[in-house]
Image (tube, rainbow, N blue to C red; front, side):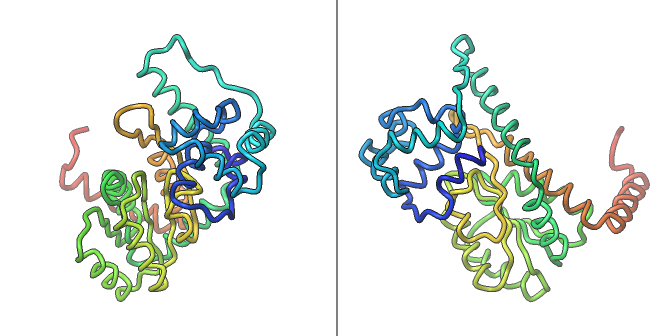
Length: 274
């Protein structure tokens, strides 16, 4: 995500339709300044008047004024890759997402703050429903090697709130919420409930204007790819592993001890072939 483009929307109270427009512009921050209002409307799946109202809600006279502000922030235009096929363009867009994530990580304050919150939580709940479920499982698998009590919540239902209660009684002080488009309503409900119970919430999501952002203590945005039939989650997975590394760095001695214990147990049980 381009930090400069996102600053235009920070603090704005946006409707769900306006959040879709903001997400579209942030995700395409390199080329957004060259898009017409009609093109933005088509990409975001909204009407052209909605784009104009969005610009005016941010305090601009209309969309052209907002586009000038975007041009001033990000400048330039990107190579459209006209000679590439659709698959190549999708991967190229992912590479651009990772480049923006690299730039974003030039400042690690949010990542380190998130790591400190999660390392201290016993147990550590990890929420990821629907599209985010595989990412929750991936993070949880590795986090369990360095954290004594990781609880992955990747299925919904009424028992999810029971698990939230149980973790809180057991001592949980923070949770990691992985919330990706199309933003499951149940995930947002759990995050709101967790906040009401006193949890600190760290959210990995696709954009700083994601619906979960307003309920989280720390937001770690990483764009998803939208060029294929189904989204590519390369960026959020990279962010999750960066966060786990920061957790390891925040408390290195217990981490090293647990890793050594795991390796000894794996060798004794002959868990791996290589």
